[in-house]
Length: 131
Image (cartoon, rainbow, N blue to C red):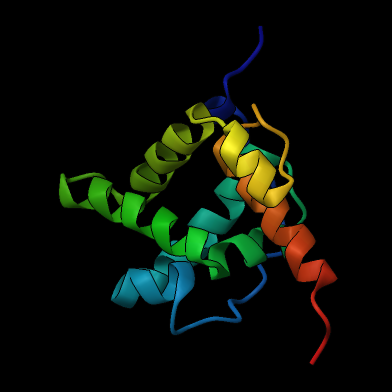
């Protein structure tokens, strides 16, 4: 019997530490960041199939900040942290990359929003010159 995205068993990816404690997902989550980071990291990894570096790049980006806002919205209405992350992922996986964003970013139109942004941030991070 096929399983849905949320019913799949979570894998154990290497949870990479944030490189952006002041902003992105970590900075937006505030005092919940240390607890939220590994939950979000593993769940996004599982939902998108992206590598760990891409997941970290996404969470550390402005998109990670917006994802944290979505998690916060679910926490504010009483969801537990794991449920808030799962609900945010479910929402972001139902949205699609549109034509405009595709033209601006090169992410293929029609991809689930979360998948596209995670992969896009991973490509951008890989292409960035090293310090």
